[in-house]
Length: 60
Image (cartoon, rainbow, N blue to C red; front, side, top):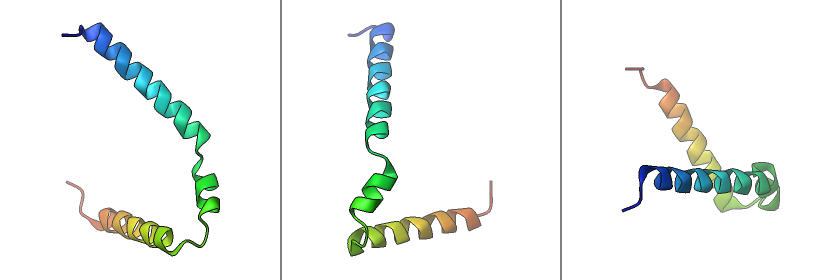
């Protein structure tokens, strides 16, 4: 079994990889590439609707 330090180092490497990947794929570039795509537009609409519904829920 890996030690805590080894597991933490692995997680840190994975986080760094995700940060680098995020910098390579900016959302504006993706949005521009698929501009006008009806399926992607529906996904965006549904996501916005979900966020709006969450904002209306009472805070606990």
